[in-house]
Image (cartoon, rainbow over all chains, first blue to last red):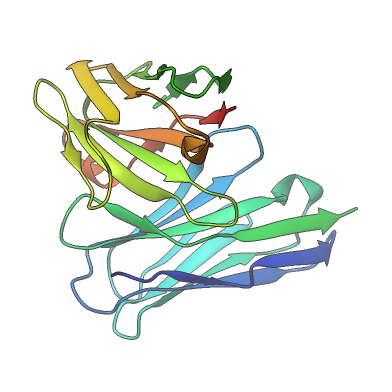
Length: 111
Length: 118
């Protein structure tokens, strides 16, 4: 059974703080690692799809890194804003099209 | 682009009845759609993979006779929960994968359906 772990489970930060979360996944049979942002009552929104070891991706104030050899990815948010409040999901994709999700990190940014 | 709708967003039904949930890709063609279920404080769990024009592939432990999946067109997949029971109460969410290219990596999600069986 594939295990994808995300930490922390939840996080409260003040507006302007920078923060980061971790996703750990199996280091074997890696195909891609997905990050999603999920606001309440909305569809999960794809942030990044990462495929190469050492890959770094950036979208505005959000960036992510990938280490496939040791099986982890970090998501960074610089200068958090209240609108960044959401649950951030990572999903491991192995040798098939199936995604195995972590439980997510719930971020709350206080104004 | 890449919008997926899901209907209904919330449904309450009585035990023993059947409920149909629709998943539509609005601005792209989806050869493959996925159905997930999420119980409280748990991760999204894949139930089945649905390919247009063929039978769905169910994950281990998911009853195919209870969760009927139909993917009759490139923009619509339906999940029918038959003879629903309270233990089927959950959050059901679909995703769709577009045809070809880099989109082969990406799945686009609907907003989900909250099912409550009384």
